[in-house]
Each structure stands twice: as C-alpha cells, then as structure tokens.
Image (tube, rainbow, N blue to C red):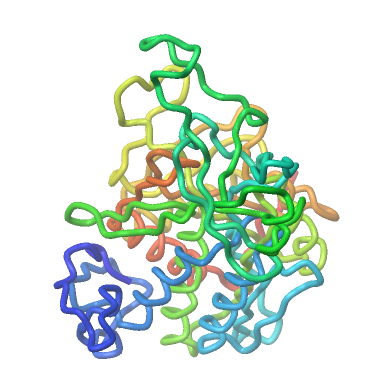
Length: 403
C-alpha cells in the first residue's frame, strides 16, 4: 500500500485507464510487519490500485452488495487459504496461523454504501424514492443516479426545480424532505418506465466515482466504507509475505448491511465467534469550518488513525492497539463513545458470550456525500497498525477481564 498514492505519476496504460499507472512491482520492496515503513511512489502494485478504484466505483447499496463482494472475494483469494460467504453475501477470507491452537482474530469492515430505492412511479413517468441508509437529501437535488433495474443500469436525474420557481427565498432555502425528491429517467409515462426495466423496489446510487485529489488524497462516493474493505485486503497481502511468523488465524470480514444496523456483522460474528475482533470503519474528520469540537470531538484528516474508548470497546484490546501504535511510531487520535459507537462494533462485542472488540477508524471528511475525502497517509498507517496488531497476537494472549 502507498502513503502517497495520489503522487503516482499519471502514466496511462495502453488500455487508457488512468487507474492503471505503470509502477514498480511491490514484491521488490521488502516489508517487515514489525517495523515502521516509509513507502514511496513505487510501493503499490498495479493490481492493488486497479482493485481499489474498481471497488470504489462498483455499486453496492445496502441489500445489493453482491457485485462489490464478488470483486473483493476474487481479489483476496490470492492471499487467503479460503474465501467464504454466507446466505446474505457477507464474505470472509481466512489465513490460518502456524500455532497448534491459534487464536482467531477477526478484522471487520463493511461493504455496503448508502443509496436510494424506488418507492413509487407516477403516471407521468417520474420516480419517487426513499433512502437506503443515511442518504442526505441536502446534497441530492440535481444529481445523476444509476438505477439497478431488471434490464441493467439506467441513468436517472434527481430533479431540481430552478431557484426562480421555488417557494423558498434566496438565503432561506430549506432542505427537501425525502418524499419531495423525484427522479427523471427520460420517460413520459409509467409504461415507459416499465420498458426500461424499472419497478418499485429497485435500488440506486449516485454515478459519481472516486478520483485522486491534491497531493495524497482520494475524493468520491462510497469511501464509507469501501476503503475499509480495501485496507483489510492489504493487511492480508502483507501478512501473506510472512506466513511463517503468523501465529494467529486471521479472518478478514467484509460485511453487508452496516448502514441499516449491522445485520451482516451480527450474523457473521455469531457464526465465526472469534477470540478478538478489530472493526475498521470511517469517522468524521472535524477539521473543517463550522464544526464544534465540544460537540463532535477533534479528529484531523491526515492526523492518523482514530481509536475509540468506551462502550463496546474492550479496554484490553484498546490498550494493545495503543502499544502496537507506539512500537510502530504511528500517531493515534482518540475518540470517546458514551452510549454506542454507531458502527458494527455495537453488534459484534455482545455476540454469544462476548467478543473482546475494538474500533479503529479512518478519518473522513464530508461523510455520506459524493465527495467523501480520505488521506492516503492515514490509510497507510491503518494498514501498518492492523498488520502489526495481528502479528502481536501470541498463543498466550487473552483479552478477558480477570477479577
């Protein structure tokens, strides 16, 4: 993985895909999971970058994650001993440790993204929509959608009545309610819509995809939490280079339906029942204008991974994470959880008899929008941190409280 991915020389491949920059083979660069790394432009292989941007652009709204999950499973298969999935599409890649009775470490991210669902089709051929997850109506009007219909993808536009004709006055604009939004698919009747293969119940996502931004950042939709799925795949890639030193069994999980309550994580945690779990999700970077630290805490984009304290986060797991970060010279940011974390950690830690869990977060600006932004330095530090955490686990480790 690359600390400064966005500094890649934009040398376009013969196929013309800017994501397929020609760079040095990652295999030539040795990596020790127990040493702090300082990676450069040549440290990310072509396949990893192509996989990242392909994953980010693949529509995977909550409840319809299969397209992205197939790509994630196909990619991680090269590193794992086996890749499996459950009935609803949560996927996990397992790398078996060398110990006779290895501890089982689960690294979990979620695969789904927010979106919309067709709620009603008018006789004039417009679509009324509802949210999938926490889609923000404040940024919805005038946006292009990709509707996943029976006959394939159909382009639509969320209508935007001209400012001259709206009832709200300039300077007093109101955020539209979800039922006030409508989608234009170029149809003149409900029959025309049906001919396009669209009916009530079809999902949709924004058409916007990811792009390199500035010197070392990525901007786009679905970084929440497709970046997490990418990161745990890169942890597997690094661990695969040092299998002989891997004592614990690692299970990298890419779970479905986090955006509506963690359903995938709940099912897979009950099924796999690991000894310890690290959940990786995004967190709000609060370093932009208008955000009150007293309300939301202080998290800086580019300031390093965040660890959360309280509620579902086991103190012993958090303590180990801090110790590992110190050994790797990784700067951590700290957040508090007074009631719940708002992530899959909430439904994993209390599974069965209890699974010692910890939440690690990637700072993200502009969450639940088409311009979500992450810093590649933070991404690199999260990969290094999780890899080192896994390598720190020994046969004698126990995170259970002793009274």
